[in-house]
Length: 318
Image 1 (cartoon, rainbow, N blue to C red):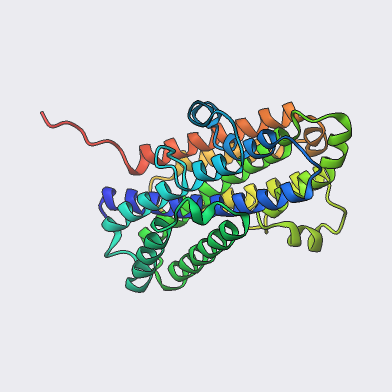
Image 2: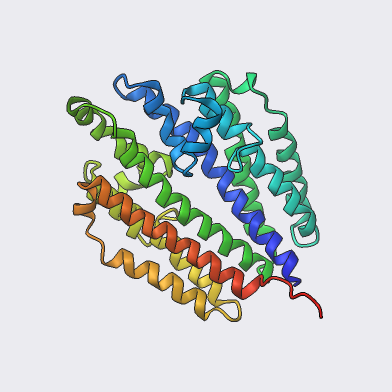
């Protein structure tokens, strides 16, 4: 397989995962704000911007965070590299180079979904109910496409590249969601408000990652910080847990050639998790933020090793 095609498959998969995370995050956060006591509109919506570290960029353009500004920025704003519409533009662009790799029926489904997203307008996401319906539909179709790829795509080099990218993106987004949803949301609240929010913020993290039901079935304790962190960071059977993603990322990489440096970078991430005290981290927002920031920087290192190994820059000819 040409390195160019492999790189397109890699980013196609990453943007799929990023788009699904974005729609789930918006819907889960909207539901959270309905359950919380009255909080400032800016403080309520700003965490969705902070997840991708876009605070300065957003505030420079919009001035303040409110429901309309944040949702427009995350869904329709083409000047935002992390917006949903830009994710689908990237999906469409990368898909063109993968026509012979992706099954024909899935290829057609992806193009159909891209057209659906491109038809979304500001008016159709202006109310919570219509926005929820549209984003829920996009999420469902993304999951159907992922299932179609898993069931119909030949499990060769292209498939391994796709799975590798999926688990890397998913692990990174899991750490970002935990970081912002569990710390920044409460940064500006009074002690009384903090007590009311505490019961909901960890539930929100679980719901955003579609893990609330599984937590209640398998942890079987009231939702709390230490157990939530352990479940989402160290569990080896939850598909969106950080450790699960790293282990499956390593399995995909090991099936490829020249994987030693990438596996070593992944092992470093796993070692960081094995030495973490989740009880202490859950009670120390600043410490939790620093720990998750280290994980995110580590994933950048994993991505860098992948690029050095499989997508080296073309050398200029003499």
